Amino acid sequence: MNEIKFTIPSKGKFTIPFKENHRALWLWLAAHPRAWKEGWPGWKTIKEYTGLDMTSYSYCFLCKVHVRIHQWCEECPLGNCFRQLNNLYWQWNREINFSKRSALAIQIANCWK
Image 1 (tube, one colour):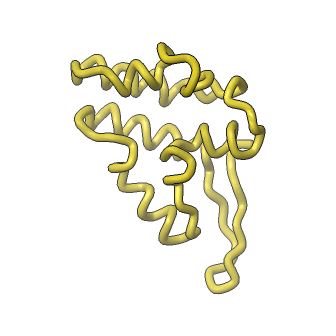
Image 2: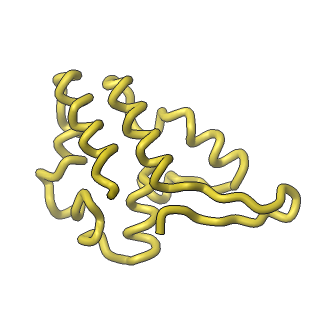
């Protein structure tokens, strides 16, 4: 599943392309290495148009798809972020060198095949 379709009576039908937004989020983080996921400007647009609040999904499109839909983190390209503490996400999350943090964000942007 790479997208989710919504119908909101007052706004009509639309689709959120998860894969494209995942890439946009992480490429933005690569360009803004001091920023965190929740600072991405795209969240406001998604919430405005869909009402979808991604805080319950860890501000992560991969979590939305793999955890909430498949119920299984191990199918996620990043692995289980709660059990595998050396996966790409945790490396990015703990990295203090901004150029390394940007490089990790690019790897995460490209992990969804």
